[in-house]
Amino acid sequence: MIAAMETVAAIYHLKSTAHEIASRATDLALEQSVEMPAEAIHSDYVRRHTLAKVADITEIDSGTFRVTLNLAAATTGFETGQLMNMLFGNCSLQDDVTLVDAEFPGSLLSAFSGPRFGVAGIRRRLGVFDRALTCTALKPQGLAPAELATLCATFARAGVDVIKDDHGLADQSYAPFVARVRACQQALGIVARETGHRACYAPSLSGGPKVLREQIKIVDGEGVPMVLAAPMVMGLPVFQEFVAELLRVPVLAHPALSGALRIAPPLFYGKLFRLFGADAVIFPNFGGRFSFTRAICGSLVSAARAPLGECLAALPVPAGGMSIERVPEMIEAYGLDTMLLIGGALLSAGDALLTRSQAFVTTVAASSHDRAQVD
Image (cartoon, rainbow, N blue to C red; front, side):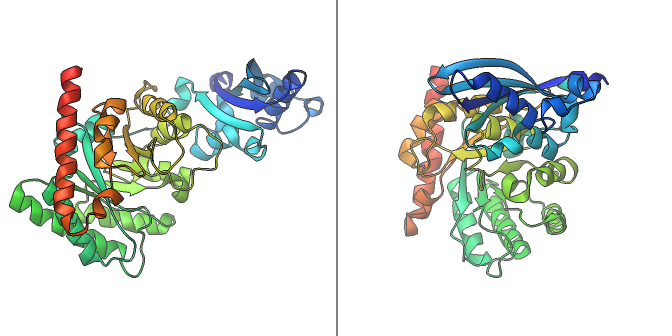
C-alpha cells in the first residue's frame, strides 16, 4: 500500500484553449489511468490511489499548456512496458499531446538496474580517461564478413576506440551474425598484437528473444567487449530484461524506430534509455542530417548524466552526418565524457580510409586537450 501512495510526475504539452484546458487536462488524467468516465468510478480505493491527479497547468504560449499529472507509481507494475503504457499509452494516439518529461519516485527507480557500466565503466574497459572517445561504424550492408573484418582492422590501426556494426546489420545471408563476429574479433586481435591498441567491437543484436539468447551466447563465447542494440526495434521490455539479466558487456543504444513518438528526446533517450540499461546512448547530433537542435541535444546530454536515483551516468554518443571538421565544436558543446561517432564521412575516403581515420583520432585527442586546458 505504501507504493500506491507514491507517484510519477508525468509532464505533457497539450494543445488547447484557455477555456478548455482544465477539462482537457482532467480528461488526460482519466485516459492515462483508469480509461473511463469519472462518474463511472464507484471504488473509493480507485479514486484515491489509482486515478491520476492533475497537479499543475501552466500556459507556455497561446494554445499550448504544460500539464503535470501525478500517476500512481503502483499502476506501472514497476516494469518497462507498463511504465511506458502509463506515461504515454492511450494519449500517444491523441496528436495534441506530447510527453516532455517524467520524475520518478525512489521505489520505481530502484526497480530498474540502469547502466551497469556507464561512462566510468566504458572508460575502464577502453583504458581511456583523459579525452573524448572515438567511434565508427561498419558499412554498408552487403559486405561479407571478411570485408567487414578488413574495415575493422583499418579502423583499429588508426586508433579508433569503438567499432560498431551498422544498426542495419543483423543475421543476413551475406554476413551471418556468428561469422561476422568471429571475423571482426579475430581481425582486432591481430591488430592488438601488432600495435598494442585493442579496439572494441560492438556487434548489432537483433531478432526475437530466442535469437537474441543465441547471439548473446556467441558474444560471451567470442569475448566480445560491447554490443549495439536498438531498444525500439527490439522492444523496450525485451531490451531492459536482456540487459539486466543476460548481457555482461556495455550496451550502446541506437535510436532507430523512435522518431515519431512525440516523446521529448531528453526524456526518451537521455532518461528512459538510461533507466532501462543503456550504458551509452546514440542520438542525432545537431547540424547533421536529422532535425535535433543544439538545445535539444544539450538537454539530452544533461539528462544522460544528471543524478537519477542510483543509476550510473550514460555516455552520450552524438552521430548522424558528423565530420572531422566538426569535432572541436562537438567537444566544446558536450565536453570530454562523450563518444563521437563518425561513419560515412570516414568511409567516403576510400583508399585513404586509414589516413582519414587517423586524422579523426588525432583531432579528437587535440580538441580534448584544448578543452581540458580551458576547464
